[in-house]
Amino acid sequence: MAIVGAVALLVMLVALGGYFLYRALPGTGGSVSANASEAAAEPVDSDEMGALYIRVVGESAKVFVRIPGGDVLMDQELSQGNSVHYRENTEGLEVTISDPAAVEVYVNGTAQDISDRDPDHSFTLNP
Image (cartoon, rainbow, N blue to C red; front, top):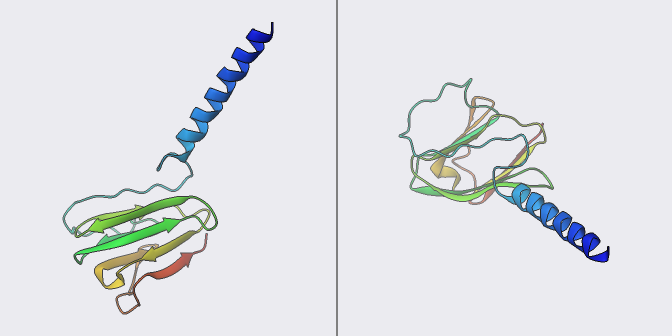
């Protein structure tokens, strides 16, 4: 009987471990969706930009996005022509951009000029 209990416990631990590993993978948790694309710098309709849209127009920029006090959604170097957007902002977003002059930033479809900001510029979008 003890062997059956030990096997059941082992199966449960493996299942829980798999679940938490899956939740830790990028892009599998939360309601914020991000799409990075290498499309040419095509104009994007402001209705499709969502809560946050960042496009690299310079050589490259490191973009860091996370939910305040929570999950990291993106921590990646993006090259020219790449973009990322988050359609929803239900929990808030903390954003850091390594080279503000190399990106175009849109918040709720409105352009934000951050080109004159210092390197590693950070800002927060409230829900």
